[in-house]
Length: 196
Image (cartoon, rainbow, N blue to C red):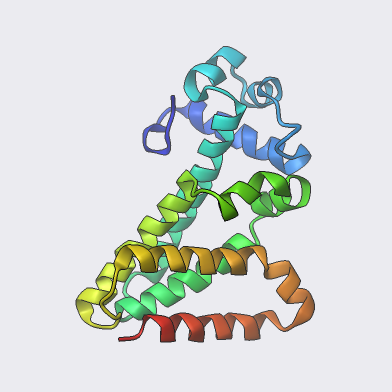
């Protein structure tokens, strides 16, 4: 089975790109192995051999998308001052990008019930990747003295849950108040929470 760490072939990328296109057009529930294979120019057997089934393919797709986002954000925030400043900015940019992400917006629009278990019951691979990225910058902040010393694992989970709330609440917040003000307030909340 393919995981994010071993997506190396062009056909893997083509299959994931095709799955993304299909989800954007018809949603998760109507995305089929046949349609994804056709879009990718591979056989269904190749898709099944590389990803198992459509559910595992969609997990790999979300993991790839979050992984690419995290890598991009890490590059953008590298060298932005203290670990705390970097962690706050990484978090704010992550919320901005995910709240505006077309794939996530489509999932929320067409298949929100698929996301619910990952918000209330269990952490998926994408959430684990995000938590690890937050933990790495958190450790930098603790090492440079800009972040209070505490249980890093617990703080990583708290940050993940808080940030998810802002991602999934972005449309509601935008309808109620100024998004720029909300972003500023989130920055203050994070900065004060992390400060020694």
